[in-house]
Image (cartoon, rainbow, N blue to C red):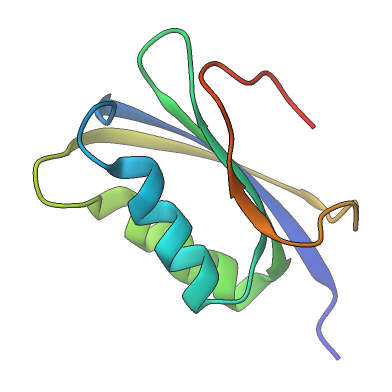
Amino acid sequence: MTPEMRLDATVRGRVQGVGYRYFVLEWAADLDLRGWVANDAGGAVRVVAEGPRDRLERLLDALGRGPAGARVDGVTPAWLPASGGFDRFDVRSRFHSGD
């Protein structure tokens, strides 16, 4: 069994007001990941997801593309051990700072 990991990613560009969080929600659901996505006060989107590394890497690839209407200028990922504290994947309200 593959150990679970946490991907904590910040996505920069035109990623607010274009359905980006719901794009991430759909990908996370399809990949059976847990965590959350939220807008950042600086105009970025933050994604925290937990699950098997191979699925998280697929999500990371999708984060770099984004939905139609988005323009992704960059994604900064951080890899950490999973906390195991999530039971689903949520869209969180504006400017959520953490778990």
